[in-house]
Length: 114
Image (tube, rainbow, N blue to C red; front, top):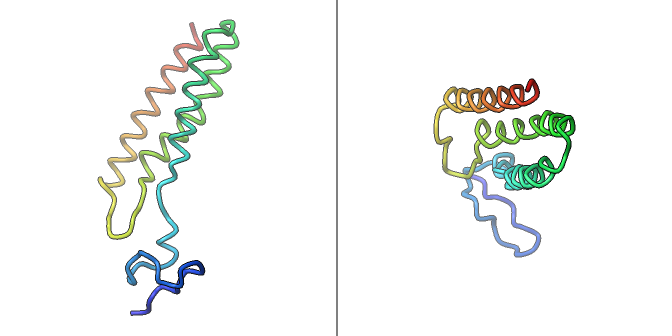
C-alpha cells in the first residue's frame, strides 16, 4: 500500500494509517458548530428578556434557523475519525433530529402566537 506523503514540517509521515485516503482524513467534526450554538443561546438568554414582546418574537423566530442548523450538524452529521464508524444508524439520527426540530419549531410557533 502507498504511504501518505511526508508533511512539510517534520519530514515524517502523517499519524493516519496508510489505508486512510487523503480525502477521508480531511473530514471530521467541526467544534465551531457547538460553540456557535452555545454563544447564540447565551446571547438569546441575555438579549430576549430586555426586548419588547414583538422584538422577542422576531428574535426567537430568527434564532430558530441557526439553532436547527446546528442541531442538524451535531445530530445527523456525526464527526468522523479514522478507524471508526458512525455511532448509530443514519435513519435514527434523522428521526432524532426531526423530533428535536419539531419541538423547537412548535415552541417558537406557540410563543409567536401568544
